[in-house]
Length: 264
Image (tube, rainbow, N blue to C red; front, side, top):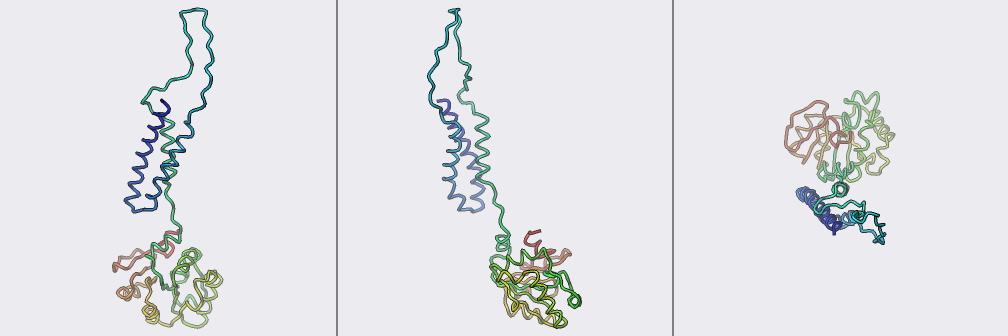
C-alpha cells in the first residue's frame, strides 16, 4: 500500500507539472502539442511506474530466537512513513516532464518562411546585399559573393520566386556578376536561374523592374529606392550597416540579409 500511495503521489505531482507546461502551450496556440498531452501523460506514467513496480514476494526467512526470551529480533528494512514523498520520485517526475517539453529549435527554412510572412515572390538587389561590393564602379574590377549570405539565399529560392537585379556600367561587369554567382553555387539548387538575374543602367530602371514584377518583398541597400517603393510593395527590407529609422510600417531594416534571418 505504501508503494501504491507513493506512485499516486508522484503521478499527482506529474499532473501538476504538466498542467503548468501545457498552460504555456495553450497560450501559444500549439494545438498539436495539446493533442499529444494524453499520450505524454500515459507514457510518462509508464516510465514512472517501471522503477517502482513491486518485486515478487520472497518467502519469509525464519529468524533465530535469541537465547534471551525477552529480546525479539527486528528486520533491518527501513519503513517509509505514509504521506512522505520520495525525493528521487520527485526528481524523476521533473526530469520526464522537462524531456517531454524540450523546446524545438526552428530550422533556417522555417525562420525564412516566418520572416517573409509566407511571401511567394522576392526581388533583391546585388550590391551591398549579396555582393561584397557596394558600387557599380567596383564591379568593373571584381565581383565577390558574400559567403555568409549563401545559405539564406538558397533557402529563399526553395519556396520563393526570387529575382536578383543590379545597375552595371558595362557588359563586362554583367558577365563578372553571373560568373561569380555561378561559381558560388547560386544556380545549382534549381530555384534560381540566370534569366532571373536582371541588369539595368540606371537606378530608375531597377525601381521599374521591381514595380513590374510586383513582389511580396523587395530587399535593397539604397534608402531612396526603399522610400520610393514603400507605397507600392507590400514589404521591404533595407539592408544597411548603419542603424536607420523606420520610414514606414512595411519597411524593416537589418545590417545584413543573413542577420535579418538570424543565421549569424
